[in-house]
Amino acid sequence: MIILDIGQIPNIDITKEELIKIANAAFSVLSLKGEMTVELDFISDEEIKELNKRHRGKDDVTDVLSFPLLENDLTNYQFNKEILGNIVIAHSFAKKRAVEFEHSEKRELSYLFVHGLLHLLGFDHNTDNNKKTMRELEEKILSNMDKENMTKKSGFIAVLGKPNVGKSSLINAIIGQKILIISPKPQTTRDRIMGILTEDNSQMIFIDTPGIHTPKTTLGAHMNKAIKSACTAADAIVVVIDSTKPIDQTQIDFIKKQTKIAPTYIVINKSDLTGFEKIYPIINKLSSLLQSGVLEIIPTSAKTKNNIDTLKTHLLTHLKEGEFYFDQDDLSDKPLSFMVSEIIREKALWLLQDEIPHGIAVMIQKYDVQKNLVSIEADIVCEKQTHKQIIIGDNAQKIKEIGTKARIDIEKLLNKKVFLNLFVKVRENWRNKSNIIKDVGYD
Image 1 (cartoon, rainbow, N blue to C red):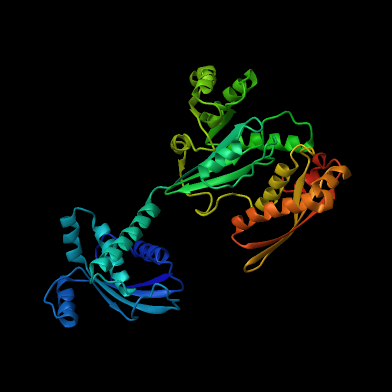
Image 2: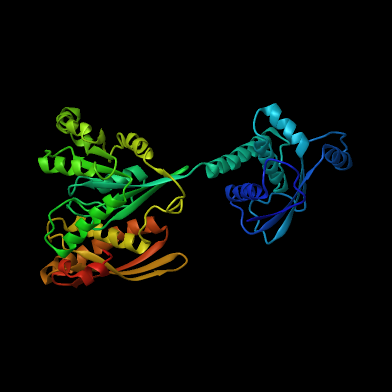
């Protein structure tokens, strides 16, 4: 953090608040730690000429001078409220330079302040390499400020479709990182989970929804409620179609309904498994929906990233001006403990396959974060005693395998060493018990 001590500000096209933002942008780019004070003065051409005479032996008017109080390279320095030094800018001369370089006065003053600040931190341009380094840093700091000043846009995109069409895989591909779990079993996603993509001045919040189905349990009814809620909040809707399966009238009718709620796109996913000759008949069958409100039909592949950027470009047009809903570094709205439970459930689904029904859940009982270690205890909840034995496996081999594979992914997520202890608990008919559904994280 930089504290800016500014003397009298003349009639110039930059405010103290803007200068403080620039200073802290430099602080962030250089990964500096602690707190420092910079003194800044705007002076006349005659005054800076006198300073040049006195300190540099030159009878010149220059645009900026720096007078550091600390010496050498300070980029790894832990500041503790030190006064870093003084910067002086000749504001009249800076205005002339702005005209000469054909950019705004604010841009010129911003550049001179950054230039002076880098000098205070030990950077110089006395050699070609040093000049290149300093110039690159100046551009990076000012570029970051440009992004900060851009109008921010954000919006919610609901991703809908039948079970197992690849909704979670599509969102992971768009975000560029695995946020949502996937498995070969339908209805892997049970709740409305958000994946967040923030790039430059835009933030897209993708709402991954359970597969559209006829509910048979209380959990199933909760999943359908999550779908309806997602559509209500959406600025755009993406309906995902599996290119390897036929299209029925139910899907077409469902898509027509979505066009009444929000701008709607159809994504024909898994194109890497078929090819255009099989995708074309699907596009032809759906093409009438382009007259019914669907904006585009886009074949994609979450695996190969085919047309992912095209889809992103379309969705960006539906974002609305306003502040971001989430921090720029956030990738999901769910807490890490929930994401940990989902990773454990994913590994169980993959390793158990058809050995047990879909009726398992994961409850985190202990989540203890230390400096370099996270200790986790979790229950895998199933519905029958026979399922418990299958999950544990002969000589506890199956539960060990689930734990090992889950721990590897959890360590990647948390970037820490993980101690994971798994237990199996029987909760008969838990999918019809609201209190247990809430306990396992599906509100």
